[in-house]
Image 1 (spheres, rainbow, N blue to C red):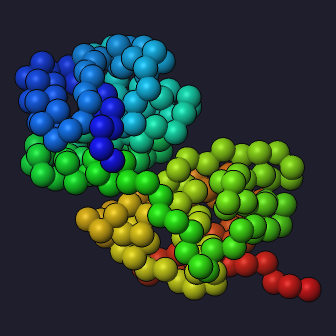
Image 2: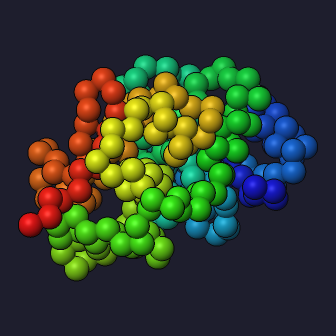
Length: 232
């Protein structure tokens, strides 16, 4: 995505300078913020296509800033953190992040993650229905609109893309790696915790009983599948 506007949020001036220089050299328009409070103000005042958000900052930390930004819109958020434990990754994804990059990272790796986060959703495949009815849930893939019992439910772009890919292959088990590469991009394949978090979020939004899903089913150690309602 050329000329994308990126907000870099980090409390270390040197990191902000390096990232600004590198990203501008690749055609991105870059703004910076020193902390969560400044980032939230900039997101309110300006339009950004992506936020690169450090977790460990004074004041409003990156995790809380991520939750607030996500509650206000669908802008892609990539978390940057020195922590590599799965627990922290899951927490960040639960907070609304689209991706999680561990410091220290190589710039080519970060640039690949940025491209993946900015990647526009592919056109619907021939197997994707225009409308899908899952009990009281109605999904309009053309309008990107989901209603549950008549009430509209907002999905994030990644949640919607994940649901759409499963719907294009109904009642078929999609392996983890294939699902990650279809939704996040070709550089992904081992980030199984991403799928677990996003699938849990989807279930909370569209399943009658998220703890006992009827439609979004897990195939242990393999992947996920969308189970269509049985016709009477």
